[in-house]
Length: 158
Image 1 (cartoon, rainbow, N blue to C red):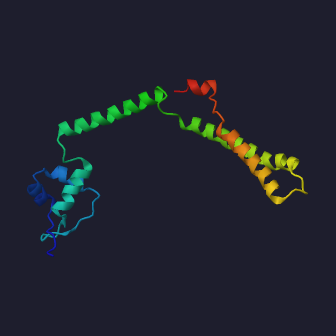
Image 2 (cartoon, rainbow, N blue to C red; image 1 turned 90 degrees about the vertical axis):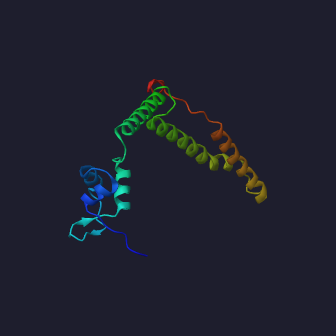
């Protein structure tokens, strides 16, 4: 396959139909694809078009304004959702998880004591296993039915 031709900034401006300033701004920080016949850094048309697309320089002022308006609308929608409790603040989620894991830890640590009080060593292993399983089920049922309660100040937090 024949290697792609590299063009200088001036040649790219002619090939793509953009001014040199726009091409230069888009290619700033992009490594050249090679060297032109004149000894200047050169880029392929494909590289230049990709750089223009990534930098938004290929868009006209109307499209750039439309993208900016859409971004502002997204930010406003996010702020509104947060204020109307559509989104939960991260610290509130952290507090809820801390409460939930604390409840799980407490219930699981209670299992040996509850099971030991009901286990008679002279009983068969299957019966002992049944008692332990019963205590684990009771702990898991208590955990799964737990309600997360919000503090009054967390409800006021937008």
